[in-house]
Image (cartoon, rainbow, N blue to C red; front, top):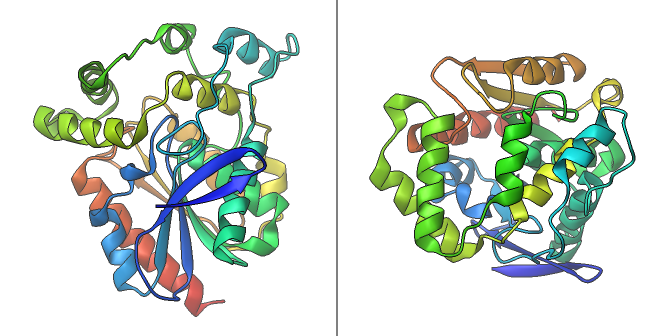
Length: 294
């Protein structure tokens, strides 16, 4: 692991290959450490000559924990819908600045980006406000605006009251999440538990998922600005995603000129091994095509 500093905020990251090939920045989902981008996912990208760099977003993994009072997700949701002015502890723009710090630490002028869920929002923010540093986008489970009108209050209640004191509690939590959000045929309790232990030992921060949700609830609507992008974009989404509706990914694809949009009929809001491998292979082809047409 290596580290970069965005002011006082420490961001840890890991190069997943040696060499001087084009960099591919990997940004995980809400509350999730960079270990979600495992070696099976990275292997085809590395084989194609790229250098994946997986980043622990703030409040995840070995990056800084943004400890403090639990955000009032209901108030932030209301503000996003036009009632009140509650703000998240930090926003998508702050998370994007963390990524720029990583790029600067590595001496990377421009990179390709892979973003999953909230990681995709961060990647889009960078493409819009730092266009010279983004060569292409690959968005998995995509959205381009706040989810305030789609997230039920009960889900926010669970996040605000969530207490995960130890590894076993986190394993139990992830088993519940996998059953709720994934496809039944992909559920493998042993596999889910093993991956939960890997994530816990890498770093799960109390309140981190809630603070990430706060940032995504307060996210700006990027759709109009996305119309100005002129970079290759690939969007992968599951027909059965219960967290980010397919309509959110569809509108993101429609907003980005020339975006390739692929809907997986066997995918929910989860990343079992078969999907991680498929994503790695498809994204590798997308990156190779982006280089060829540059």
